[in-house]
Image (cartoon, rainbow over all chains, first blue to last red; front, side, top):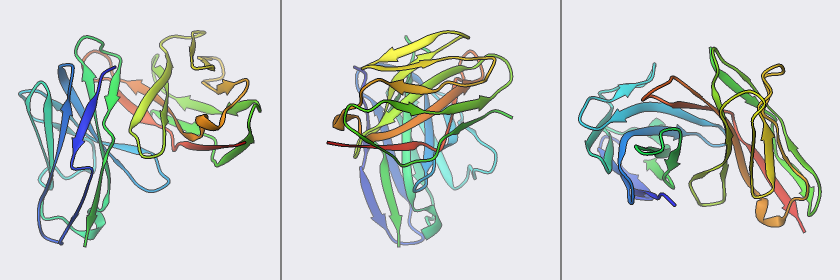
Length: 116
Length: 114
């Protein structure tokens, strides 16, 4: 089946630094990728929709200058958390929509971010 | 607006028991409905889906029927196994065409004991 990978799987960083998270679709082309944030014991909250070759669309309340999203190719999207602070600590999950199977999103395993 | 409400967990069952996880939704138009499962340490996986009223999605012994009159999409399984222990998310998609954004419920933890 379709596989989506994320790298790194977990990261610890100091407050004020920036962290980049990669999301790759391994065996399919994804014109659209989504970035979610999951808090403990809560649901996934959509942060932004990333379309290949264009600017990401952010959900209300998500700071686009803090969460930079780049979707440079049909298999790669990156999320950069700039000037991270402890409140940014969370579980970040990406998903990719298979261009050939438009209703289906495939999820990555997630990236655990801890900001000290 | 669009939203999904599902029963709080954890749900603890003995092996071979009957499972129901309730899910109701609020949406404009005709959304597609999904159940995703997240096993420990893994990403979300699509379990089943239904795209129109009265459709029944099924997979791995799980079933859910799209009920427009009650705006529900309850997940059922006749006989659960220990390996079914996971977090289950009900979701709907809004936006047609290229967007296909998903809105998730809060998730229900299922723990099946031998």
